[in-house]
Amino acid sequence: MSIGWMCVITLGILQMSVFFTTIYLHRAVTHGGLHLHPVVRFLMHLELTVFTGVMPREWAAVHRKHHQFSDKEGDPHSPYVYGLWKVFFGNFFYYRSECKNPAVVRKYTPDYRPDIIDRTPGANYGVLLGLAIFMLMFGWAWGLAAWAFHVVAYILLNSSVNSICHMIGSRNFDNLATNIQWIALLTAGEGLHNNHHEFPSSARLSLRRWEFDPAWAVIRLLEMLGLASVSRLPIAKAKAA
Ligand SMILES: [Zn+2]
Ligand SMILES: [Zn+2]
Image 1 (cartoon, helix red, strand yellow):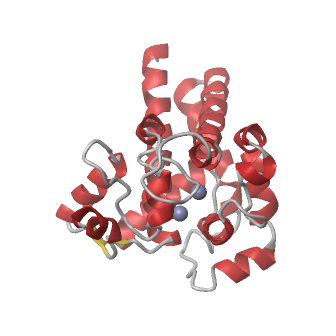
Image 2 (tube, helix red, strand yellow):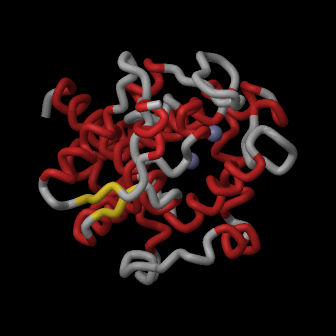
């Protein structure tokens, strides 16, 4: 396979992981802003298990704690508490120290209902299957390199939202998070983080005419296909007002 095709496939898998993180993990599981068809939920959960290793219940717990303490003592990864670059480069470790704390997971996600993937033994080692898939597609050396790129890029895209999008950028609302459109384009809308902190349960993150939330376009498409239903859209009310 040519290097060009390897890049296209790797970036495609990266963007798939990014879209499923915001649509399934963040907007549906964590904030309940939309309901996804069980088959869509399963496929998104499976992709994240294999290519990111994120466990939805852990992710939701840490993120809900982030909303509770936003940019104050207790926030798992605030750049105001720990420093911008420490969170940018160390977000993964801040996240890990919280998500592996059973007390945090129990406290913040009592409503979480495990699905068949959660109940599958060894699901937390799913990333090794992802590595094997990359190696089968590209050969062991290129496969390992592409997998490593995917993992690092995924971590840094998430950490850019938790660090940069809490300090630098524009604000529509009076909270410390910021909107950065170019980060939103790379993170399927997550970069519109000031809007999100104002309306956490909104399935749509864009508000102004010039703001673009790529995942919202996918959610609308899923809705048209009968595979998703949006339960909360407070941002639409703000827009109308
Ligand atoms: Zn935030
Ligand atoms: Zn959130």
